Length: 127
Image (cartoon, rainbow, N blue to C red; front, side, top):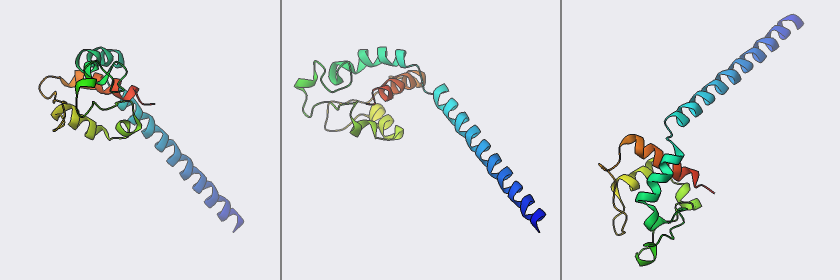
């Protein structure tokens, strides 16, 4: 009986260890994929400053040179409110724009790689 209990205990530990290993491996794989498809932050910063900075400001705080003339004012892209939006929500706003605001959509103006670069930079603004 003691031997059987020891074997069971060993099997449970082994299974838990395997599960932990598989979980860590999957997590590392997913993180690697996210980084690989995540875009280049520096390229995104350049694209952002050319296309978005006039309204949203160079640091994304909604204080660009044109921002003061817009009603409603541009979003603070570095804010918790904006950064807490899902990737899909942010992509939708960037690509389709936001009605009732000066935010126009960039669908057709950005290639997928450019969008990934821009998105990587936007996520880097997170406080």
